[in-house]
Length: 514
Image (cartoon, rainbow, N blue to C red):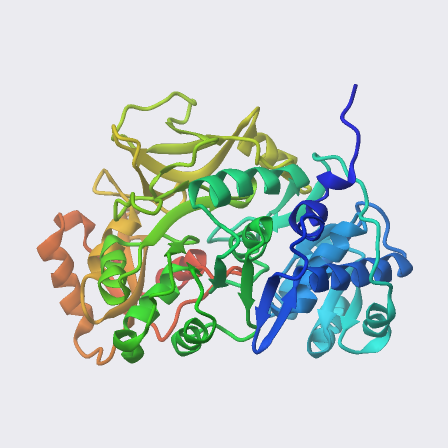
């Protein structure tokens, strides 16, 4: 007999309502500026959102976008959509109108919950789209009034564990993102395996995240994970800067910091780093991009806090390979999180020996349903219980997994494979390099050569030749970048990652490498 739908299968119940039933309703759930919200208050806010959404004619499994700054309204809308039986689509509220219009047409969302400050942007994007969601404006307008006046009691909609809950956008470094349809069960599974069992999240933990809640990495680490155990999350709407993060750590004394390599690099190089007090932190995590070993060591030496690198994907929702507290090997992603089966395989799907580079395959109960409106890629990536992505990795005899790049990023130079991360790690050891990325560009003979893009720290006079020499002194000659291009900043994807496709176009537009 098929498993019946139940209220308890709904994410909103498992992560929020259950805390109130357990008697934790008065525990602090959110810390925003000087304001705190208890679990009972977050539940009441979510219930008001759910009531207002149903009054606006939201139907079961209908898709609703959230495009809000991080804060109580984001959390209330998120759980409110789920409580009402809807499906959450999280988008970056700072996207350009043309990018928003493309997402409107792709997702077919009927509603979008937006901040009043973003309403003009969404209406402009709606004018560019074939079909646009109706903006539900919080803070002002009819919907904001409806939420404020709605009932604080609501019966969470029953769902099946396999029903769609959230659409996540794949975090690739090129092209338009693909929507990954994830079920209610996936979020519960990874929370138990990774957050509770592997990292040991507890009710006394206070989390603070650099990436915003629309990024699945932060949705888990800075909302669902602490909520699953009665902990609390620090939220802030501003763009993360080292100065702001130092101040937030000082004021809120978080125990877990969720970070990304770009900001790790900015923090260790900041003048305030030497006096920052990070003694409240049990550990910090890093994901989203490769963490070079030199950057890990600079962080550890500067702040004295363990930095746990890991790998996750939207398709498996969150992290399934990670270093863990007390067990870290710098320069690696760590080991497979128990409960996930991680393999390194060739193009025919055969397991490779330890030490060889191959495609990453992973199986577990957090596997997504499909890519929306992309059956070709769904068949390629979802093979039975396995997800087969574009990441290339190697594993040693002890199970440590090293990231070697994405299949479309790895270069073949002089007949040999070269992972851009190897060159980037070398460049990051130079004191004048604040941030870097390496891509491959064909020369006039059709041969691929590595090109480096660098954001300099301080005076950049003569830096191009100095960095070439630095790499030649440290690496095999075929690996060194043939050109070094200095940039004030990097182009970014919708998730804030370096847009390597844009860098390749920029490199190809210049002189050909030799």
